[in-house]
Image (spheres, rainbow, N blue to C red):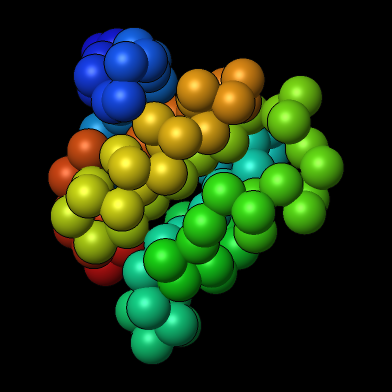
Amino acid sequence: MMHKIKEKGFMNHFKIVTPREAVKLAATGNYVVIDLREKEEYEKGHLEYAVSMPDAKVNEIEKYNLKNKQWLLYCSRGNLSFRLASKLTRMGYQVWAVGGPIDEVLK
């Protein structure tokens, strides 16, 4: 599903995936997987290859210098990942955001 957010005059497009789809995508190793949840939540369980970046900002992502890669973002409910996905997409990143609680697939 393609998600569109109207923000400050720009139309941003990023792909929304279910938590189950995110597990499969992360397992391929073809995505930069970012866990936006608190460190304690990450330590209880996270997607394969995920990097813990609680409440990450665009400048933290840019430090990786991996704009040409595919990014998979997730948080507890989708709010943070959607907001960051919107900003990164506007900057030319290819972004997938998990729509829904990731905890259900980490058990």
